[in-house]
Image (tube, rainbow, N blue to C red; front, side, top):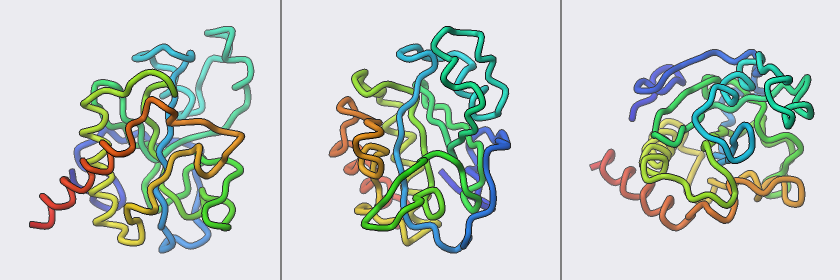
Length: 188
């Protein structure tokens, strides 16, 4: 996977209105992994895309009422079939982390890249998602060298007590091993 001008070459790009300029566009030093499904536990529909694009019909499902007026995005979404959709160029600030802190530094959106996985805390993620996420993470690490393996976290780690994703179903050791393999392949 390659990144060109802050956008994944092999992915689909859709510009979300829910983004802005970073305070320092050179300060990109954290990768945050999320999990999302809309409605909860359902996969493959248009609703995640609609949410990130700002056009979610909050009457389409009874659970969407709490999303009314929410302005949120991620840099990328990895669907269960491995499709990668990018909503915000990596040099811009996506609105994915909310109230958050990493190693005493607050406002993680300012210095992080956010990747959403289509899933739930308790549903195993797919092999294709691990494969594409590892390729994406390795490409990000090569383009943004301040992001190292110890600076890849879950939403649950930067907003404990408020967020639980990507959850217990996410296999961190498998993911990190796959990232290492991808980095090794691209640097050989």
